[in-house]
Length: 222
Image (tube, rainbow, N blue to C red; front, side, top):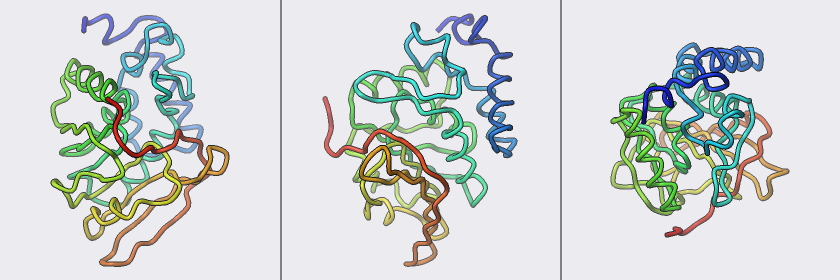
């Protein structure tokens, strides 16, 4: 990845990323670590070059195979909810996608364990994040509903697609005092972003806001 592509020019420049950060502040994102991570992450390298002029709009964009790169506000909101409620030593991400959320998390925790069910996205994210010299991420091509039991328990879990209900296997992989942020809902028009906090065998669930995500699908796509 050449230096120009990394730093960007015009609509993909650091100045443009700065304007995105100002929009996030206006929308209620307050955590300075999260805002700095967004400002330092070149979103345009995670999407098709034909859409790079829209990379710093506060909107979701298609990345192929029926998937999207999440709206920057939602990425920041979910990350802020995790960061402000406890340790971020080990974080599990369900749904690597293009790797943008992964990149944000990598700047804020010791290790990101990320799971993706679509092989093409899994491989592309590994390539992109490697080109950005992000090396504190471990990758798994697998069904996200199963989490990553081998590396459990996790301080935090972030889920970037919506199951109809919260998967019990993911809740079981939370450390005591750990928390998960997950969109839940049967349809895209009736989803809620939920913060799950574990204390022993008790799980407290708090609705953060209404959201719209692609569905979390079981199985893998090779």
